[in-house]
Image 1 (cartoon, rainbow, N blue to C red):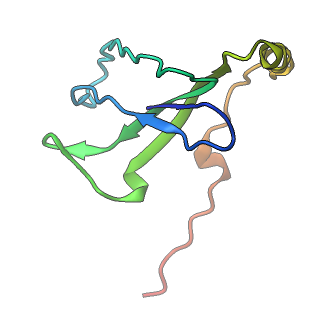
Image 2 (cartoon, rainbow, N blue to C red):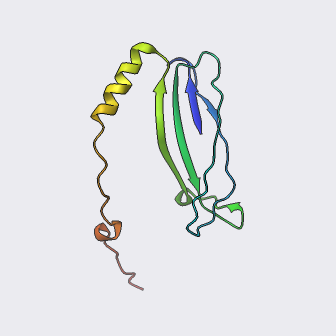
Length: 110
């Protein structure tokens, strides 16, 4: 999903493209998505949306949806320096702790 906008007084334009379904079998296919920049675009945000499905049908629940910001940027020269500065401040990725170590499961009473 690509969001682009001209300024704070204009609504963002949203463009989406979907890949073929990816099966949970360990294979990681590679897809190339191509978006065209709308005229007068000043800023952009590129996201990856993942949706769980079964037999080529999307499961329509919030629990089966995920979104990750892949990148963001600007075509405004003055703001590009701020983006570059923020990239330098970005913390180094650390190994994520095992989620099961932090989860407390509560047993049902009945």
